Length: 328
Image 1 (tube, one colour):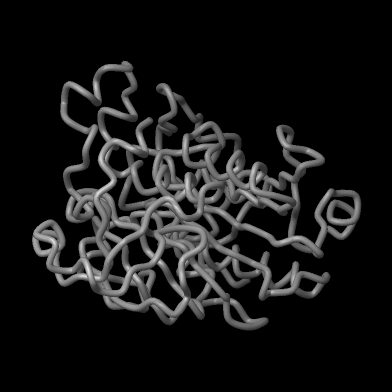
Image 2: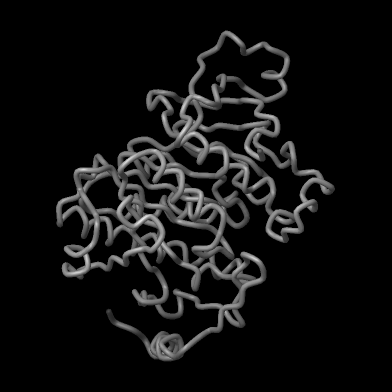
């Protein structure tokens, strides 16, 4: 890769140890951001790490790397089983709730290859604009990783890419830059809205990024993208920005700083994770608005299940009232 002098300087800087990552509860924070516009080279040991979990190694991950056939051959990956590739969001790490929810729910569901992409270094706070810039580079690298797996035996039809918040936008870039075919499905869990709400589809997750794109909105117009952006968009409890169980009193009860800030945002991954093991839990109705849904005017409209077993023929906006269900 050709680098100009400016990029070369930052690549040298970023190759040094650091920046130090600090954790406040489950928030990942750095002293200074790593900006991939300034150095587009991905460090496979620090920038994007692909952690594999299966029922043979449910707790301790096995690391997979592009081009490293030895790691792949000695891992527990089994291309006869379906594969899930998950991307986390801003300020998150492998300790975060969404990361662990995906691991645990799919392990419970069946024999899966669960690959959790750790991009903590590139998505750490408090530098959100830099994290947004980095999403495209993470997505490109993710596409290279999927291409590598396809060349080594992965049936692309067996892959499900899931992303939460910024991770959903990353999933879109994976779909854009993939060269071995078109992703069969992307699930976007409250795709990040700030700095994405008013950009063209080529710069964010949209229906062209996979054969089927399903979206769960839970903090629309706050932390989440405020417009429909999939083939089917689910708006539980109206899609936000307010969600049941997220009043100030309720979100402060367990002393979690993460919950205090992102309670509504988290509802999306919690609802989806529940459907991985209970796929017919949330039956949503197609409707033009949540207000109309609440009147019962859409009771006889098309109904589909939110989440893992969604009908891939579904199109449009669907609403459901869940109450406190995902908090229990």
